Image (cartoon, rainbow, N blue to C red; front, side, top):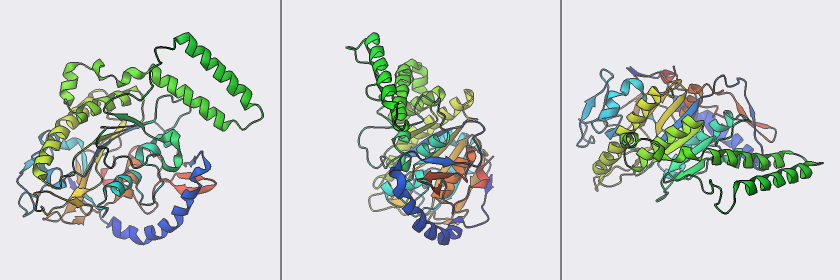
Length: 425
């Protein structure tokens, strides 16, 4: 089902945003004050989860969700029909095509941003002003519960090249909400007790630490010491649950279904982490930055993504995770419609695509439209702030909430943005 938005969101935002940037940026200077309060008018009714599949480098919308096969810029690949009547996608996504009735696709993203570093931050924070938390960190803070022991936010990527994925996570929320980084599928360092220290010795050391903390607390402000003790408590819980990082516990059949490549293994690990109780997971899928031989690179990337994503979607539905997990597929930008001298597509921030699935999302809709060449949005334009707003709305988190930074209220969502109502259930 093709839907449209009635108003041009970016035009509506411009004058307000130019004013807001000047006033909100100064508030970030109080980030060093430590614990950031959260003012929310609506409590979280039921805890949701977030899975962000980040197509790092910028996937080509023309080879994926918004093909233009009859255009001079369309490239060599055909479009194929999908499970949504009248909606077509690129032929490199045959499995996704059969699952389109379960997705909500946005074909009209326009951020105007063509820098990898700035794009990574913008798409994950919904802001251009530096210092704000990215989606995983912000959602982890909004879902925080004092009894939680496992990490709230885990980010999974390969080791080399790191490229532009590490753009900062928690911002002014502080280290407590930084993403725990899983690199090449390996569990966090020092997660197991050293062989030279037996359980009895470790327990004795913990007792000494606890008594020392209790003595030091007398007559002092407790927050810092309790945060220090809390980090030990969470580290101990993670050590007890270290088997969640072990993919060998999955059957050979399941490992084969996800695919024997970084993205496949990382998506399987993401499923295990979310099932174990982690609230937010980001999986980076690399090498979409096809400045040369675009059609070769898009074929390779889509081959990995297509089968693995639908396998993940099927498993989430079968295991009851889909109703409580929001899946977001995005990158930092799209690719130019015009094909360059090296048969590549360059950076393009003016008209591209992304997709949602899972909790809070109305399945089987396609929002927005680009022109026949794919060079500009002609209907339903949205930007990064709208996407951030939509994620919170789908997860039933309060879009009017504010971060309390040293006594000053700073809105969690850019006030100039709005949720994309057409994709919300």
